Image 1: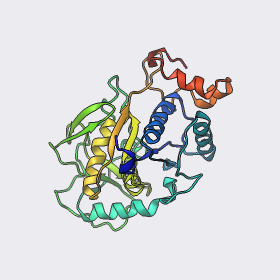
Image 2: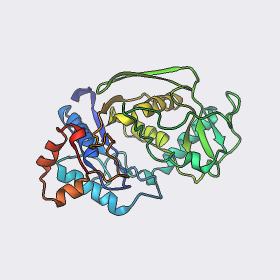
Image 3: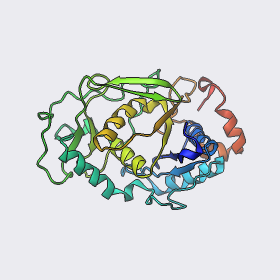
Image 4: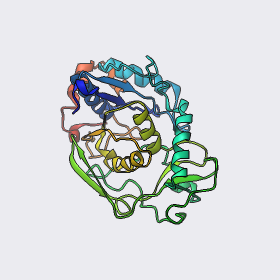
Length: 296
């Protein structure tokens, strides 16, 4: 992990699409501790690009719940900072500039595949297998993929989905301080992935890379379900000529059925635990329990 003299900058990146649960809390607490122990800066970024599910009341709740838990950040939508704005919905210009660079470099191409195939592109693709990193989406078959090096003529991203062309057969390897060394083969473990949606919304992978680079994040702390996304993002860092951060992925909490805690299930939310009268210290003690012992 970076030392204070290296200018450590970590981040929290919650999405206001539901109430934060115990799994989120443990990962965010780890990010807070690593920034605090390094004497560094912790940035909070509101990842509100999912226009169908993001809500202002969830955004307010996540800030309130994280503060209640005891987490302190130095930059964010509520406190400002040198790399504002800290809400992704307000950072379109930065994403558009990155899209133009990728298009000009022949890294991306328009895709006309069905809406159903692309419905989850705006959100983080959480791999939800027993090993925390099983396939999160089918490998794209390349139906719309043009010849290598082709620069798309379109001058606007809206109206079509855009995919990043992965270098088939290349091994993308990285050292993860939480989960150890990892490697994935492009074109086998993951395929060409969406970076922009036809409704003119930036997809998760591109927005995450653009923001982490612009906010000078030195280490990304997040759940182990996003390990494969790291391989994708390393390719985007390279295409955009940015240096990638260091990585620390955390084990996932699971319920009594072995399922990853998620907003779309009846997982334990921080708000519900607060309403039951638990203190922040008692909640923090809960994630010391094996995830199999947690119950909804």
